[in-house]
Image: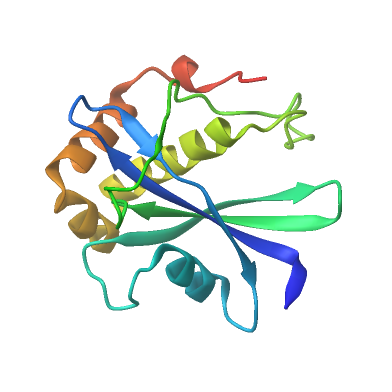
Length: 156
């Protein structure tokens, strides 16, 4: 088992009011690929054509650990409790040459994952087909691409 690399899985869903909700699962990387660990952690089969499993980011923790983040959408277990994403706000570094933000909160990671999926909805036909099978998810992601860029920057 590799305790210096962990896989963070973020099952994402939209509730009836159009609000994003997420769960956070953390699973060790143990003798399998990160993709396999993410699927295992979320309970998604490799052949599932209606659920997107996509690596969206990675980050370094000062303890020497690398966290690989995967978005899972739509959430394969929508009946489980989930946290409301109150604001879709990205974290950013202070300068172009210092890309790592001083503080990264889980909400920033979720926002980044959603923006990533919104981009893929428009530009990746395989991902688009899967995400479009859930009308609420597709509409909520499309609305993210129409919001002004300033809505997504500056979280500290």
